[in-house]
Length: 106
Image (cartoon, rainbow, N blue to C red; front, side, top):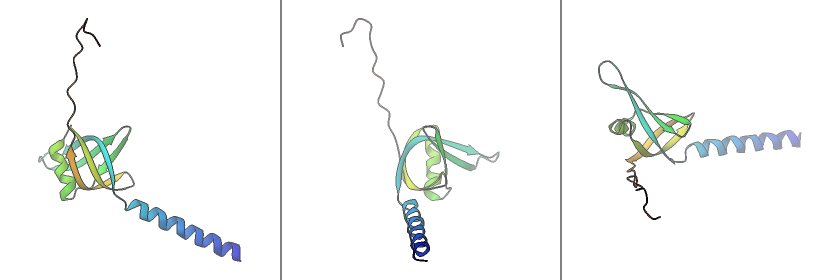
């Protein structure tokens, strides 16, 4: 009896910890991809981070990402089931590539 009660309490603590962790903000950097309908309205926004693609919740902040279509963005928000609810974002400026001239010293 004591063992089953202890197991139940541990399981509840584990589930509670997972729920709290899901509410923590994370920051992801990836490429923004916007899908529009025939009427030109945004129907979906995705953020590709390496090999993982996140759906973006289409709230006010999420819709703001549409201006960064095909660009890299640093996005902060909460993630659940590969969907990110955006709380902040910014464009990531890429460093210009340095040209290597043949015969130049390193």
